[in-house]
Length: 118
Length: 107
Image 1: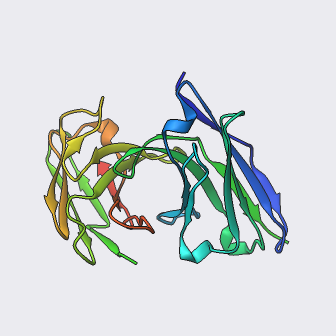
Image 2 (image 1 turned 45 degrees about the vertical axis):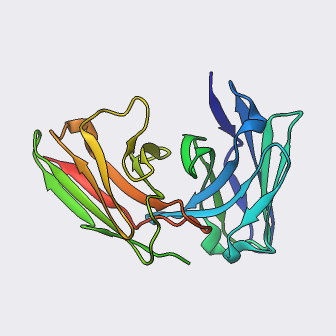
């Protein structure tokens, strides 16, 4: 079954870091880039970064530069996203999504809720 | 960054109606535009890419048009299951921003 399976919900304190996993199955992981998109409560979707799952090349939104790291483990067919120095505004559902080409996202994970609260 | 602006923010229409949603980019993005449908509590679903190419398995009542800075998503023969929020996304240059969304209610 073609799917992206994300890790479970996280609750973190301000200043902490969170690491989310996104495991691909049912297709060749290295053939498609993976993007990270988040959605704060009641807000629009926000693009954060992407990774070439095959060679590990990355690109980040300037907004998250220095605070976000996205990596891939081809042996585990998994992408990882780590966001540091968390603040309350980072409370959101984080989605990973497959790029089928033309930077269009045809396959999405179910999302991981990250709650940042003291 | 390229800004994406959608209108209207919400629309209410009856079954069988035609609904049109507009998306405007702050600069020329050629045909690098995608449309997504999102229902509450779920991930977005790709409807259209390349401004007008219908994604596989998406019903043909969905169509997209436009190029440059102005784009349109049209839902013909509106169905109850089309109740959702619709987002445009520019695919031209990073950061690949989304519009603020248009909520479609089917009466």
